[in-house]
Each structure stands twice: as C-alpha cells, then as structure tokens.
Image (cartoon, rainbow, N blue to C red):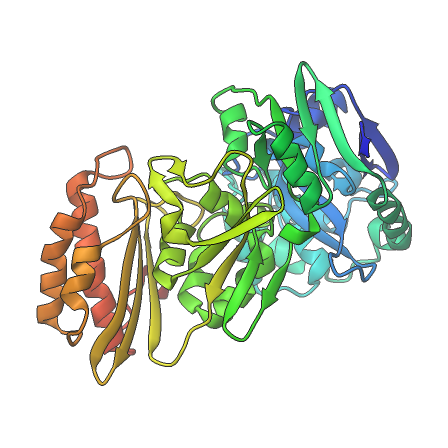
Length: 486
C-alpha cells in the first residue's frame, strides 16, 4: 500500500505535501513554498553550510529517543523529510527570546554580514542537542561544514563552545514527548510517495517493496543521502523522472558485527558507522572524517559512494585494499562479490537491471595486518581527492605475505596496482623493495590530467605514498601527516 503524500513535522504542525515535483530540494521548499528565507543558498552543493537545517528523527533502536542531525537542505530532496521533524533557524526563537545558540553568537560578536549565521546557528544547535559541554575539537568538527567570509572563526567557535552555558530548557525539550508521539504515528503510515510535473518519488519501507519497485521500473534512480546525486539537479539543472528513496528500508540501515567482519547496510549514513570503523582501522575513521562535513556524513552513505562508480570516490580504494565484499539483491535473489569486482569501466558496474547494493562486508583485522590510507586533496576537509591511496599489508617473519595497493584517481575505476604488489610480495619491506614498487607503478597506471592534478603529479604522489607508508611503518615516532603539525 502506498500513501500518495509526504508528511513531516514543521513548526509543531504535521505538514502534508503532494503534487510537488520531487526534484525540489528542502531549501527550495522552504524559501519558495513556505517563504522561510532564513536558510540561505550559498553554493547549492553542500560545501558552504549556509543552507544548514536540522532534522529530528526517531532513534532506529526504537527507544523513543530523538536524534537531531544537521543536514544541507540545498542537496536534500523534499521527499526525504517524511516521518521527520524539520527545524530551521526561524523555529528556534521562543516568544521574543532568542535561542541560546543564537544569543551566544550575539554575545560573542560572531556575525557580521549575517549570510552564514543561520547555518552556524543550526550546526551549533544540533551539536548541543547531544552534548551541552562540547570540547573545542567537537565544536570544530560540528562547524567544519560552515564557511564564514567576514567574522573569522574565533568568535563563532567561542559562541558554539559556550552556547549551553547557563541556558534554560528550550521549546524542543519542553515538547520532546509530543514530538516523539507525532513522529511515531507518522512512522506507522504506508510508504510515502510524491508526484508532480511528470516526476515521481517513492519511499519503500521493506526490501521486498524496494525490489518490486525496481523490477517494475528498472530505470528508477535510487537515492539515499543524495549528497552526490542532488548535484545533478542543483548544479547541472537535470531532472530525475523517478526517485526511489532507500533511507526508510530497515534492512539497509543496519550495522552488525560477527567474529570476522563488520556488515554495513548500504543506506546507513557515515555518522552511524564511523566510530566502529575507526575502532578497527584508525586510518579509515580519520579518512571518513575528511570525506565531507558533518552535514554530509549525516546523510551520505557507503552504498552511494560505491554505487555511483566514481573513479575518485574515497571509500572504494579502502574497501578494495581490505578485501571487502558486497551483497547485491535482485528480486529476492542475492549474490556476494568482491568490491574490486564491482567496477567494470568508467561509471560502469556489474549491477544487473533492477539489482541494488544491500550491504558491504568488511573483514576485521588480524595480528600483523595494517591498513594505511592517504588522501591527497587541495584542502584537508570536505574536498575531492586528486589521489586516494589505500595500502593493506600483512607481514610475518619480516616478510610481506599479503599486500593490496588500491588507488582512486589514477584510472577510470578504483584499481589495484598489481605489478607494484608483485614487487613487494614475499620480500621484506625495505627501501629497495619500495623503489621496485615505485617503478612498477609506472606500468600499473596511466593517470589523466584534469583540474585537480596533472598526470605527472598524480604518478609522483602515488609513488611517494608507497615510500611514505614504508617510513611510517618503520618509525612510530616521526609524524608524517599534515594534521599532526596543523
């Protein structure tokens, strides 16, 4: 059964929308339909944070708790709001009193032109909903997706650190149980859908419903966080005929651990599994923090990063190096393949019509195994890689017994450096074997030049990263990462 309406909580009222083009983003809906213009459009790509809003949703563990998260409204499709509470900067003030997240910015002189201010307020609001005494590091992480070109960040950071100091209970805390009750009722509704201007949106609630929708219309476009897909609409002015949202399919939103592996649902946002991966593979957790801002990690998914088959996606090289597998689903039939076998050519994969990614399985580390990751980009946070290098090395008796060197940005697909691996396998990790691997890399890849880097730069960096990995494994004292000195 399908419900031809999308319903969500906004300004303490349940809003029902229908007959709206599902290609409309939350920001467009707010500014053009609700005339809530506090949220701004700065980049329309999820980079600047001026459009930041907060959504509250029921915890997936069915504990009756709300989870508040910041998102980029400029790249979130309006249908994704179903069953959630939408909160904008206009909603924070109670009577004539500013919310403490707003008042703190005033008191610390944290705003000049004011264009970015609503986004900073909402990022701070989301942070303090979970942690009223955040550390400076936690504040920096929460604000990393917000840019200011006027004030400078010191006063903004101070405001975010002290936002909850001496504050009273806000209106959201006072209406907490009412919100939980309303969202619980919305969750009981049939699968929501939207139709407008000849375009469709549907949000299946089970994996069988999802499989059916894709069987009926194999050309449908899957969307989870939409952090990449939405740019085709906001930047390239494309329209998508049928969007199928996977974020309400419980089977795709789980994370499980077995004795030997971590199983991550393809629609689970990064923020839900980053801590688990960081525990087992610290380099992987650190790299995920650089994939995008907090807003991006709150919505972006592992399935989306793999599924779009980009040669510069950050997660595929890491997964290939780890020997990870992925489970694909087609109308009740499942198959499991290595992640490295998923990619065929530029933007081409082994997915069959109507088939989709169900989960990704990541092996847990064993004694003697090491994963090293290196992301080369023009800025530390929230940037696209020029080169992403992932090195998995297993040593025994001072010999390399297993080696997988995977790169992004060096070919039409994420790809292993098979000849460089051969140069290292069975040998000791020495300067001599490293030099042999660097020479072999010249045959493994023929990188291209583009706006991010030249072919010569990419090759030289890739070669040097093998040497950097060697140096790091030889000495745990010398710090080689930029972040250690910044």
